Length: 139
Image 1 (tube, rainbow, N blue to C red):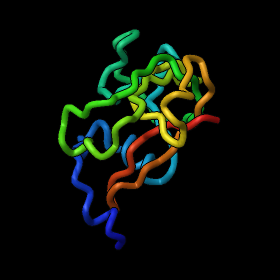
Image 2: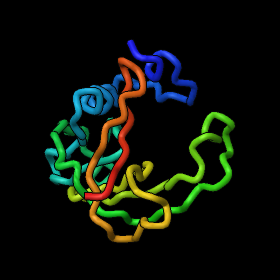
Image 3: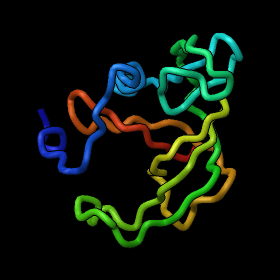
């Protein structure tokens, strides 16, 4: 096991029974989203009931992992000491091709080159042997 994996010091998500398929997908290098079998709309963040039609018929599907940079800010001062070494970094909202918007980080792009509407694709940051984080990079 590498030092990066054994020494990850930032806060980590705690998957729940509802969100476990999402996190398992990221760990496998896939973006999995819920899709409502009643209204056919994609849902993010994982939940038990569709926010659009209130159906409980949510199914997991592999998404394209593609989208566009909807909005962003450049973080120049970390609010949590664990992120201090990362500044400056791009904190972003990505609108997925499937419709939902996700909060994430834009990586492999100097902050000054980030642009609203730029095409992006999913990147999977394996921070521990059990957890990969969803990030995006320019396409």
